[in-house]
Image 1 (cartoon, one colour):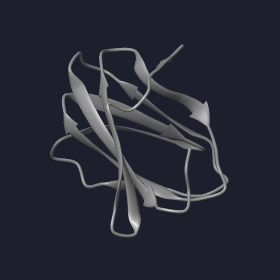
Image 2 (cartoon, rainbow, N blue to C red; image 1 turned 90 degrees about the vertical axis):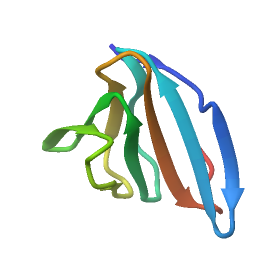
Image 3 (cartoon, one colour; image 1 turned 180 degrees about the vertical axis):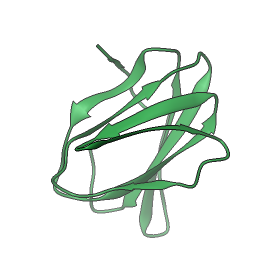
Length: 94
């Protein structure tokens, strides 16, 4: 079970919203879905991103992944001191 965390940084930039999370192993964003898409990427450490019919381990070398609207997904750190970022349109707050 993933321990839910809040973003360390949460801000608007131009027309986008940026949320940066610092997570230890087992922490992140448990299974959820919403009506908008966003991209996520790992900046340090490693995370596993799970979504409908797919699971991928990401690190700082992995291309950002789009998480589409209305599809469940979750993000879990697989290493201590991991950092991941979600970027979404400004009008979509979660």
